[in-house]
Length: 184
Image (cartoon, rainbow, N blue to C red; front, top):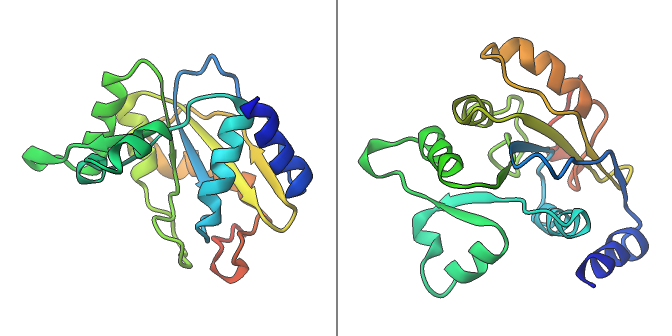
């Protein structure tokens, strides 16, 4: 029932398309979602998660997961990050992967909804440290398409791996076009 409702909203009411697919046998990965220019991105992501009928996760500081909001954040795929003991986000996120049987982390490597010229690298090093693949996802508001790309296993050479990832986002624009991360 939920899948039909989300499909109706996404395809019929909003007029979007889903291009590409995701193999549900992949239990752990890092989804990199670009561009991130609006809070509406979160709701599009919830619809896609419901349509694909898979668990997709996010992380947040552990203080967000206390009563009363903790229940909701966990229900929609959230996991608290414990950065005590001097751990950084990469180490804390890799630890979450190690503790879970299924964990598909969705991140926006822009790190903000504002215009950026360079992506943050944390998504890459989380995937590398957790030994999981990276899957590019584009939210193209210009074409009303969510595109799911092919997975890439990080090699440890960030610059070379980004040469394989970034072309996927060429021509993709966010809800607020002038704040979109643009791939030339």
